[in-house]
View: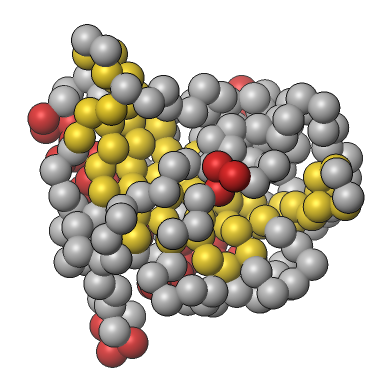
Length: 226
């Protein structure tokens, strides 16, 4: 599975552009402020197994992306009540898609201090939407992210609608949900960070609270937003 950690960009919703890369910021449409430091890098790859995804006949299932995440947070905190929810990562099981229902290869990341352990990973099982068991790891969690609430805002279906309405209708193959901590306090919110394919834009960020859409492009060795 593709790992965003190898990309030169994004909050690790995605740890942040290398310090030598300075983003050029211009607000478009309702774009959120872009941090002056490196945006977060993406999470390590979720499962090594490929979970099943709902067939097209089940795409109207009442189980939402945010419902599944909420359930995963509940499961983890039942076992580790001091776990702090930091990020969610989901990858398409069918390659590039315009339908968020196929982003079912999922991982939730929590921070914790327990002996030598610093993070908890919760991976989706091979049967959607059943989570596997939480597992402790010594890998450090994303350093620049804030704390994600278990209910952080709009569902991914609404985020994709807003992204398409803003003119970004090409396919995507993964998404991170993160709370970039480098924004001013009054402007912080959870962000959906989509990895796009098949167009000029490389990533699109959508605010989970206000729905603001920010496209992110590569221009040589720089990252630019509109």
